[in-house]
Image (cartoon, rainbow, N blue to C red; front, side, top):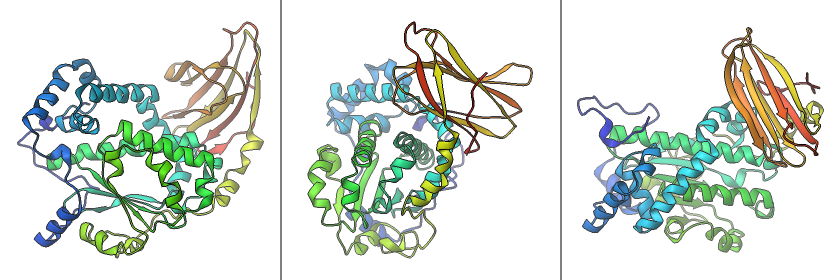
Length: 419
C-alpha cells in the first residue's frame, strides 16, 4: 500500500524493525558523528519559499502523487533537493521516475529476481553487506568491496540480471527506509563504505562491466535521489585518479560532493561514525563476521557450464507459433531464459492446474525485442503445467529463431522440441 508518516496510529507502540540494531552512543560519540557526517537536507527546516514550492509540487501534480508508493513530504523533498528546488525540473524528474518504474515493472522484478537461478549465485558471490551496521546517529551503513569483483563475472551471470538484482536490492533498501520512517518518524539516508583494494586495469578496461557500473549509478541518481548521505572510498588505488574524470561525469555536482577518498589511514574517521563492534576489520573495526568474498569467477563459470548442452534452438516459421509444456511439482520454481536472434516475437507463459484451469498468466503475448536476454519465472504452489509459447502468427514473411534454456530450481532441463 501507499505509505506516509501520517498513516500510522499515534497510539501504536513503536517497535524497531528486526534488522535494525543501533547502539546507544555516548554524547561524545553522537557529537563526533554529527560533525563528521553532513546534515540530511530533506530532514532540515525549510525556508518559507521552499515550503511554498513543496506545496505547489503536491497540489499541482495530484495524478503523479496518486501513482507514487511513497506519499510523504520527505520523499517529495528528495526530488526537489536533487533539482535545486526548481519545481519544473523536480516534477520532470519525479515523472520520469514513475515512468521508469512502470517500464521496468518493479513488482515483477521483486517477484522474479529471487526465483532466478542466478539469485543464489549473486547472493553468495557479491561482496556486500546491508545488515552489519548503523551509524551513531541511527542511519544505515552499507559495506561493499567492489575491487574484489571479477569483471568476467558479468560474462557468466548476465549483466541484465545483475542490473535487475541491483534494483531488487534498492527496493528492499527503500522498504527499510519506510520501516524506519514508521519507527523513528523519519526516513534515513545511507552511508556507503566502499573498499577499492584490488581494483585494477582489468576493471576499467572491461567495457561491459564498466558500462554496467555507470548504468547502476544512473539508476541510483535518477530514480532513488538523495538516498546517499556519504560515500567513503577506502584503499583507493593510484589508477583510480586516471579514470575519475569519466566516473565523475556519472554524478551531479551535489552527489559527487558526498564522496570521501582514502588511500590509507581511514580508521579514525570510520570509528567516529560507526561502532567498532559493527565496523568490519578491513575497515578498521572489530567485526570479523562473514561476508561474500567475491574473487575469481572461474568457479562460477564451472558451476554454470552445463548451459550450452541444455540450449534449445527453436525455429518459428512465419505465420505460426511454437509451444512447450513443462510439468512442475508443488514448491518447485520454473524459469526460462531466451534470446530472439533477429526481429521480435510474442511470448506467453501460463501456469495451469491439473484440470487445465489457469492459475497465473506470467506473460501474455509480450512482444520481445531481438538480441536481448529475456526471462520468465514461476513458483508452483500445487502441481502445475507450464505452457511456454512463442507466437509468430503476426509475421507474414519472416521466421524467427529463439535460443532457449529452461530450468527447474536452477537446474538445466534437457533441450525440448515442443508440442
